[in-house]
Image (cartoon, rainbow, N blue to C red; front, side):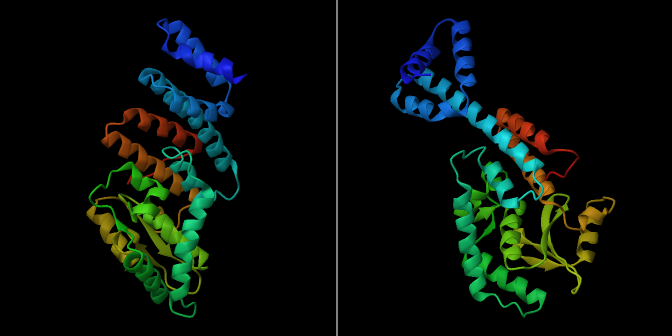
Amino acid sequence: MESNELRALISLLDDDDDQVVSHVVEKIRSLGKEVIPFLEEEWENNFNPYVQRRIEELIHELQFEILKERLKEWYESEDHDLLTGMWLVATYQYPDIELLRLKQDLEQIYYETWLEFKPDLYPFDQIKIINSVLFSKLKFGANTKNFHSPGNSMINVVLETRKGNPITLCVIYLLVAQKLKLPVYGVNLPNLFILTYKDDRNPQFYINAFNKGLIFSRKDIENYINELHLTPQESFFEPCSNLEIIRRVLRNLIMSFDKMGEHAKAEEVKELLLIIADGGDIIE
């Protein structure tokens, strides 16, 4: 479709006839993602608030369809790359964020850690070095003031502000640790996401990234489960998959939007969760 035809269509978004507007919206939707740059340009040049809002809605709907397609492809992939999954979640709010940018940011954090890292140390001491770099030098920490902010589930926001919720801080931590060739994985606990150091040569232990990398034991988890009056499950102690991590991030995001009163966004994120959900998970 020519640009002048598109402009003519967009001008009809302010028509008094709802049927005309509905037809125009469907026509623009049918053009697919290729029309997004043109819509963005028209939004900048249009001074009618009503038309601008309609354009914003159209852009969001088209971008949301792209996200659903990408998430389905990620779900069907073999490796379920964790950073890619976190990037996809972030593109719900920040559709222009680039995966390459996230990789570069994490590469810098890895480099800062690698400079101080000593591979020949005992696991506890290796973890203490990571803790020192992430929480003392780089000032990552818990966002306790705005715990339910949706931004806490967006890895680009957490990388920028250095504040996040348990699961996003854990994701950044384990991506750095695994790049250092350490056997660090995520663990799904009720109300809290943590990490575990687990291999065949050393005793397994756990790490709380939300509490500056506090190291604790299986017994501590058992006590925690007892305090919650829950029946212990093996999943509370063992590594979970990248797929389970992204499911939990989406569940947290749903809860965040609901608490913020943004119920329409919560419903959209539920759609995203359905794409990758083939079982239950825990909400943080």
